[in-house]
Image (cartoon, rainbow, N blue to C red; front, side, top):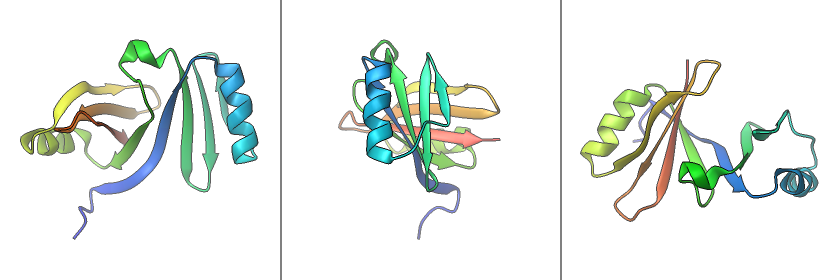
Length: 118
């Protein structure tokens, strides 16, 4: 039975080298204009799925897309997954608007994102 505190993957962030060029590709792919369009982040919302483009993400340790699992209690979920063998890559941090994000790596080095909206 699924954990009711986990709401599923609703956000996937993609590291990009050229934000303007990537924005054109994702706009064509998704068929919509971005809902968030800043120098530091471009985000698209499509049918409940959020796709984000993050320039310079390599400096944040992000070398491939990261799927973010939406959870009700990020600290509790961090404790649970680290007890099961995951390693915290980035501790929970408020990125604005009451949104908390964190990343962990599983035992194979795969990056898993956790996201909590307050």
